[in-house]
Each structure stands twice: as C-alpha cells, then as structure tokens.
Amino acid sequence: MIEPALRPLLLLIPGLLCDEATWQAQIETLSAHADCIVARHGMADSIEAMTRQALQLLPPDRPFSVAGHSMGGRCALEIAHVAPERLQRLVLLDTGYQARPPGAVAETEAAQRADLLAVARSQGMRAMGRQWARGMVHPSRWDSPVFEDILRMVERFTPEQFAVQIQALLHRPDATILLPQIKVPTLLICGREDTWSPLARHQQMQRLIPGSQLEVIADCGHMSTMEQPAAVSQALAAWLAPLYPA
Image (cartoon, rainbow, N blue to C red; front, side, top):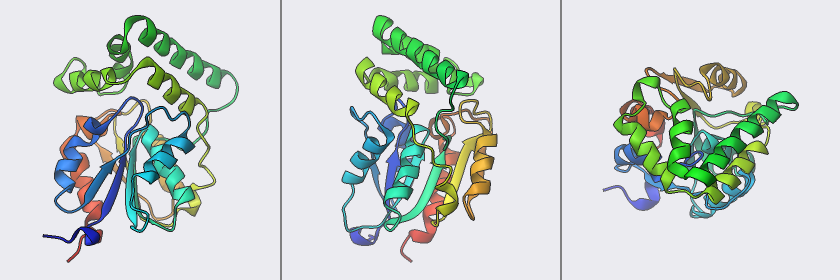
C-alpha cells in the first residue's frame, strides 16, 4: 500500500456540461496509484473563477498534476499560469488556447450558443443535449449507449448553469503567450475526428509548448474520455507513471 502522502495527486477538470462521469473510466484505472480529485464548476462564470474553485479542492502543501478536458483544459492552462510552482505534469485533452476571435466569427459563436441556451430553457436540457452532443462525438456513436450517457450527464445541469458556463467560454482568456512558458511535462490528447477542437489546433499547441507530446486517439470525436476510455486511460497512466513511487 502506497502511503497517501507519497501518492501522486491528480486534479481532473471536466468540460462544458460535464461532471465526474467524464472521468469515470480514468479514475478506475488511475486510482490504484494516484489520488484523483474531480473539479465541479458550480455557478462560476469565468475560467478564472473555475480555476480558483478547482485549486481550493487541493491540499495546499502537496504538488499535483492536472488533466483538463475541453473547457477544463482551459482551466488547466490557467492553473499552469497561476500555480506553476506546484504543478508536476499537465494533460490537455480536446481543448483550445485562444480567446474568442473578434468580428463575425465571435458573433456567430455567441449566436450559436444563445440558440442552444434558448432550447435548454424552452424544451429542457435533454432536448438541447440531443442537438449539442451530436457534434461532440464520432458520428458512429450517435444514439449509442455513450451518447445516452452524455445526455444523462447534461440533464444533471440546469439552464442557469449552462448560461454561466457559456459566459465563461465566450470570455475565455487567451493563453497563446503562456504556452511557450510552460515548463512541466505536457501531454496533449485529441480525438482524430474531433471537429470541435480539431487535431490541427493540438498540433499548434504541441509546437508552442516546449517538449510537449501529442497522443491522437483513433475513431474518436470530442468526448475522448468517454468515447475511447481505455486508450485515454492508458495514455494518462503512462504519462503519470514517472511520478509513482518505486
């Protein structure tokens, strides 16, 4: 039995409308060697506020690693900015690093998110999730058990929580300047068929983060931790293995 103080501490940060279910398979794999803590965003309305909440879950005297998926990846980048002295390893999954661009592209994104919020308020979170989640997974998984798991997860949120998370994403900070400054070992994971946070973006991030590595998950969309749980769990376990006590 590994002494708790010697076990690696891993903070797992979910994305938009996601909770512990996003990380269930990874926790089952990693918990034999690491202490896993899953962040919850509550009513935080900015990436910075989500990050502060997540850090409050951790013992203040222990170093830790962080893995963030999608919106959670942006929180993980913010942690690399505000708490680099405690950070041991960083994993960014199906995420991005740039702020919302100005002009028509920004207006289109805001309008699309507003339309989804309107559906959530008028028809319920599940009806909204049926529209939203089809862009989140590989087309082969539409109406599959994984798709149903995602819908059940979305239903655990309220339109009010959806609204504040949308605000957080619309006003997301730009981490472009931060990426070359990241000193900890960094792993990027991306579903090959992720159309929301595409592979090309992760390749850009790999070029900007010194020494970073990129793991591409085949037959996989945006929800990599749920679509290909074994492949993602294996990649995380291998990445964290150098931290395990001998």
